[in-house]
Image (cartoon, rainbow, N blue to C red; front, side):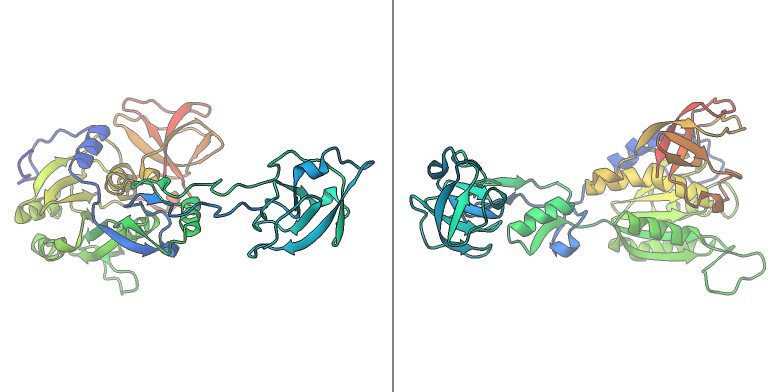
Length: 412
């Protein structure tokens, strides 16, 4: 592990993005704490227990359609020209049982989902009959066990249906409810502590002093955390005072699994996060990633938690939230959809700049094509990122891009 970054004059060589991601993922652990949640709040959560069946599903032979439960041998050779007549013993609906046994020459009128009575080995669909109630004319023959759902056809008692570590979506919730479960044990969500820094920043809804702007980063990062379904342990906008920022983190670190800050990571007099790291005794992982925007990202370990300090420029913060923080959350949660997704695409419009450094440019992707957002790609500009669903990646040393070029895009 490298030493602390005491001053802004230190010559620190930027890391490649892949190395920065690898280091960040190496320093965090998968969440191990678990909690019991009701099924209504379990979607997208990750199972912390194996799920085994306590009973067969279905728990009885059941009918897959509306019709007649009967003995297949009684209707052998039946067709429209040679119908077979059977006596209807009773009718059974879903949720009810027929106590009578189907005997030679008889049938039971049955509805979808109802238990198939003893003695029957097939179910005739009602369209192949005259819909009789006391007696029924059968116009079609059946094989034994045709249209017959066996007990345990879905799963048998004792079967392991889902293993711990599986993420729950609609189908998995359906399986759990089919087992009669009201609750399920899942891994706890990570809790993030967020902090934005800058004398020039004001909270939305408060009056602006001369020289101030409203802070967008803190609200943007909080919203992204909610979209990714991780909890926010706390959030604060602080001025450019290292002691104040350090005190906030010191007082609240115990609530968090991961700390995110934005601003104060470059080389100016007001870039306080280097001093904050020194005051807290943060063990530095890296400073600077060889990408644009967001090169001066700073990261370290504090009280056993990872702290990632992003650029104060809004687009830089947004880009590196996806490029650096999202893979960390994937490791912590085990949720595959938080993994970084790249796709190949064809440019619909050009990009007029060379890229001496690996560059990520905001864009819109659809059907294998990508259109770069109009306007500036400067890291301080956020407005033309509205509606973007990806970033086009231009490798280091790229020349101007033209419409029709094949490019790689990072999905947001």
